[in-house]
Length: 435
Image (cartoon, rainbow, N blue to C red; front, top):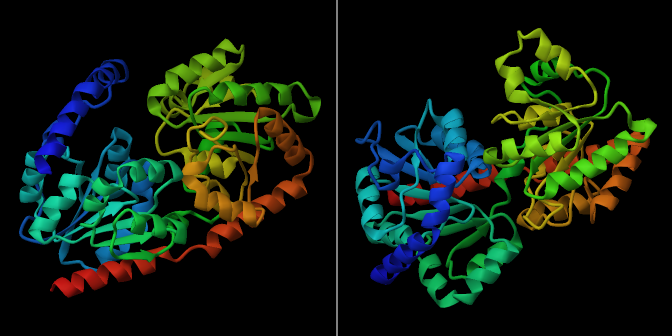
């Protein structure tokens, strides 16, 4: 089986190499961390016992914060290391954990590379955020007697359909997982059907990491830089390909209505490599544009400050780590990658801040949160851009309606918190049993 998997990986490399090379040249991706991706990883304190947590990208890193804080408190004699797959995930993990834990790129799952990585890291427990169950990873962990726990586990409709087509192979992989801590009953059933022998419903960690306070640190600085006073602010967060054009259509129609002349717009694309593309799209519409990165770097330049004060200037959020600040200043938030079939972005953060939250019909990657919010009227789902225009007009002309949506959304988030404690307790049982 090991040889077959390695051969399949080699074939996959041949297929994706041209795309990866294009992204490396065009978008400057995949340039960092090659030694680590090849398993050459070192620890700060190799004499200590070790917990290895893997989180693919930004969302998984953010979800891991509360449980890692709790595990660090409970197991201070362990060293914690964190791996990520994407450049954005690495940057976020470094920002959040870099002063406490080693952060590195996840090794390629070739058998010889993963064996080298395990030999260098020597973990006592591996934690995989959501659904990062790699064949050689779990095989080697099983052979070495290292427990593997899926944390905050979820299997989307699309992933479940894909895995079900190769269920015999998947079962041999998932059967090596020590414990799957699933977000919902439905996800738990899917983990079981795919071969996991020990599955517990723990809830979603993202509810615990969602900030429910009114104030976000640094938001007042952003408001001052953008000259935001009493104007209404619409933030488009985590937007995707082909979606910004539809959203700009809605914005321009709103601005042509005198009732919404004070409406300001912030666009924050999900992927940094699309910042330039979206900037060009905004300018091609004849709209004034200011890039927030330029403001952050040059707030002393009076010409920039004067330029961005116009309420008709679209603000492009082209920096990392500032989305929550924009959200905290918003009157209404649209959560992107949902008006087009891309699976959505996380709407939990917007709802937790007590903001009127809207998203499209294609948020299947966040089904549990969508269902919870819609059931308690804590968000608005729109079918298309025409439906979005109607919803925006309703929310802007009826502030009481929008405020009820916002308050309901925050209550949903608070009601579903508590996964950190349950997750930590189950991990503690496994570590204690290994002593």
